[in-house]
Structure formats: structure tokens, C-alpha cells
Length: 405
Image (cartoon, rainbow, N blue to C red; front, side, top):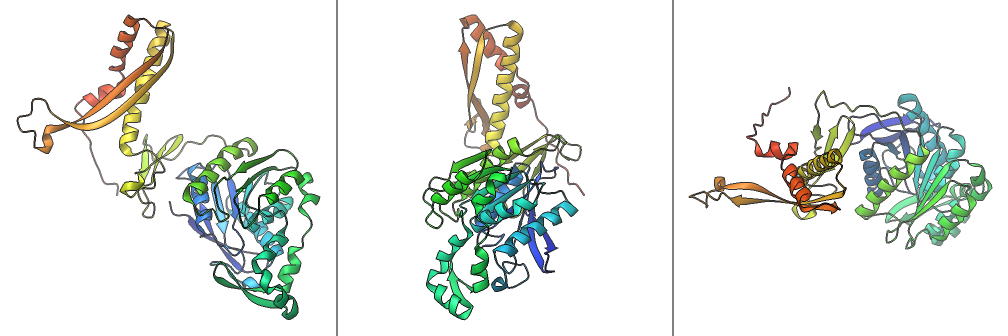
């Protein structure tokens, strides 16, 4: 799903560019702000993947370019750590005025340090998450250590970071020397989740330890084992999004369950142009994802359409058996159904080479756990064939397709 392009002014009158990731046609559970890493932008892969993952879980996320980066106005040489914090506060004001005040801040690398400082001034925020964040903003000095002398002597110097040129000023260095994190984290009174990779070669894992020890409970740590600092692996980014979503449920007040707008239909399915085969599925109260395997061009972010079809048959089967066993008061502890689908030739076909001679065959293997006798097991097998989805699949089915004007 494409994010909504937004723009807002910061306290200096500069126009900042942002992307707002909204859940699929539903009310967000809450709004969050994502602060990107030093010299990155809102289009950085980790930012987009984590933001999309969170929006799939019903959380709206605003990511934006700090002053002088990406599509935002201003010169990077004139920005500093304090301006990053100020930009975060302005982003919060924009959300509060146009949507809802943010309840969570997420920061990657130096953006993680920035959200810790900004949170002190945002009463609406009660959950914070850092990803590979330094415990001391001065940590970024190592990125241009070989130019420090030039910066101190000449007031500024051009440095190369990640293959891109940036003008770093002495004022920028001076501004990094902020109030120590440990001096305010204990009084922050906000839930904190620290995500960090033990293999991070840019910001060492000892930074996560320092932040954790400086903070007061509730605080949590999640190891991003195997991930690099920039979280370039897609599966790592998606994992972070899933962890953030689950963790936030405990600390962020959710909106009451609001019925999704499916235009009066039981199911709505949508596929955006830039999503490949990753398809969003919405029912009045639920949100699902379907996809295709990597080997056929998909991203493997969800079950395939045929997986979902088999899941429908399997779930209906176990529910039907559960209801029947409960009504009979039989000791059925658990039901497991294993399913397969294939195309097979009709037994009575006299032209097996024709495609129309093949039919769909679902193989359903049912495993019953419980102290059941042979008659009860046989009866449950018969009942399985009476589940509503089974009956529907065996009926003559008509599919009517209409274009919506």
C-alpha cells in the first residue's frame, strides 16, 4: 500500500516532507512517529518496511525527512541534533492537529536517541522504541573521526558518510553534547522497548545495555540477532514491526474495536501497484495478508490463495467437530487437520489428456486426540463431511463478477 504524502512546517518555517502509513481503510489503533537514522531519509528500506509492517497491524505511522535531508527543505549543514528533536515535536503537532496525537515514538540509530529526548515534551506518548540507538549522541563522531581536526580548525568540513557527501559544522559537534541520557530516563515514566543487534558494528550492543540500565521499568530488550545496523534484511525489518505491534498493545491505549469499512460486504481484497503480489484482505473486524512464494515472484508475507482456501475447509472442519463433540459430551481434546490440494483426472473421463478432464481434489487428514472409542471416531469422520464449507465446495458453484463504476 502506498503511503500518503504529507508536508508540514517546522518551527523555523521550513517545509518537511513525510509519509503517513495508514491501515487498510480502517481506523488506526493509534498513531506513531518513526525517526530515521543519521543522514538517512524516510525512504530508507528499514523505515519503509517497518512502517508498512506496523500499518498492516493497524498502527498508523508517520515517517518524515529531518531538516536538510530527503525532500525536506533546509541545509543539512545548518541542522543539528537539537533541530532533529525540534522536528520531532513539530511532527507531533502536525499529527495532533490533523489526525491524532502520537502515542508511540520509534527511532533508528541517532533517531533513537532523538526520540528519547523528544519524549520528555510529549505527554501523549506513553511508549518508546529504539532500534540500534546510541546511548550518547556524541557516538556519531566516529563517522567522521578523520575530519574532526578540519572541522574544529575551519568551523566545518565536507565528510563522506555512506558514500554521500555532507557538510558537518563545529556547531553540529557542539550540539551533540546533550544532557546525559541517564539523567532523565529514570524520570521519563514511559514504557521503553530497546531493540539492538549483538552484531551491530556501527553502534555496539553496550549502548543498549547503558540505555536499559538508565531507564526505569517498564522496560524491555529484544535481541536482533544476526541483523546489521541498517537493518537491510527484509525479514529483520518485518520482525521488528511484528514485535513493536505486539509489545505496544500492553502500553498504548487502543481505540475501541471499530468496524472496518468494507462497503457493506463481508470481505474486501486490495492489491496496490507497488505491492507485487502482497494482497490485503479485510473483513469487518479483521485484517489479513495473502502472498505468493519467493520462487514465483512474491514476497512470501502471507499464505497463498490456495492456502487460504484449504485453511477455510480445515478451520470449518475442526469447528464443526468441536461443536458436535461438545454437544455429545465426548472427550475430544484436540483436532488437527492436514490438507493438500491437487488437480486429478476424472475417473470416468474418456479423454484424460484434456484439461477439462481434471478436477480439484482436496485431501483432508484428520487427527483426533482424546479417549474416544472406534464408533465415536467413525461418527466424527462422518460429521467432518458435513461441515458447511465442505458442503459448499461440493455444490455446483456460480461466481458472478461485476465491475464497480
